[in-house]
Image 1: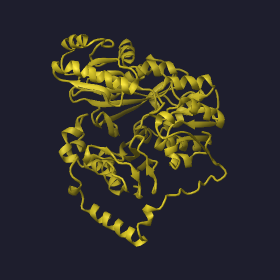
Image 2 (image 1 turned 90 degrees about the vertical axis):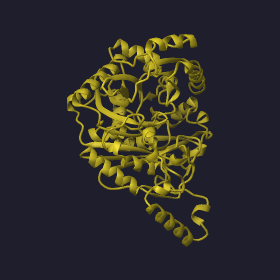
Image 3 (image 1 turned 180 degrees about the horizontal axis):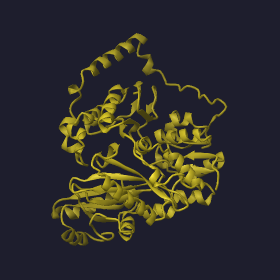
Length: 501
């Protein structure tokens, strides 16, 4: 067993801080990396050490494998945690870590390749007896082949990029006349986003639920699931709200799908934290969708109902420790919900909203957790994902959790940029969501209520705006927002910020 002492977090924002918090609890040193646009980001100030790795574009910083490896060696980090996004599912990065003797906190490069390719993943799951969505056995080589395939599969179908993710390289086809253009568009988008234009075809599941199971697997053959997360509130295939337990599940279905998730992980000799994602139809038939070979954005709700620190388990597994619990030791206690807070304008086609954050009033109280990285005076850069925080609540029951989230969203105030907070409040007041009667089309089915104009919201907002204007007037000439923001000195004064590039 190799004892890890110092971890470089190859990421930014809230997930970098999340990993660093567990590092501090384990008395491990943490190393931050940052781009030139992130010099004043909170993860830079929170870490024990921080190193600039390049210019603002992620291709020149957070995706630059060789610079990150160089910083790891220079700082003496013996392990790298990739977080999610960026290089978290990059087999070349995991391979380079191994070549340099650095522990990659995640699965092997071979598993990342296998499960990152959706065609290979389907083949592996079929071989393991895991139900998959009906579709083609491999890549579609031509448009003519696509036309032949849909005759046996039946419309509607989804054209999907084999290397895809995040909704890219996907096209829904409802009519045969759309097939050729959809294949061409999916291929073009996949090539641009992933450097791979391979596509395949799956039967489109009408009104599906997106349900995923959290997996932990050590290096000694022990694999468990930590139950499910319901992730069906999405827009453009991006999740907005997650909850656990799922209101759709029955105890019998949970047990069956949990066992299938464990078998799926074992079929590819998985090691670490991962997620098996399923689509579930209205008849409670479930189908393997994909595997995420990393920590998920929504992992906190699983932590809240199980009491298991998933980042801590990732580190322990990477060190070679055995899991200290088995499947029978795990329980779901209460109900947890996560809302993703985006700096964007839902009432303007979800346009990103970068700029300076003026004031923040964070929600507090029983059962409330906020994972974020912005602070008053921080300027949100335009280069990265617009998610700025995650609001997580817990309640004894689902009704209590919804009421608590409603209260927490009411308390959460951010000025200076537009956010998704008001829209999330509307979801918590939507009768279909409250009843647990929703699927992946929830946003489009309820958009008239969810995307209403701001003037229809609580008039208290106007009072808040007026009070803030009065506040600015009293401090004189808007000095609070026109002067250059200077970040406070780190509490860890002995540790300098280091720029080696």
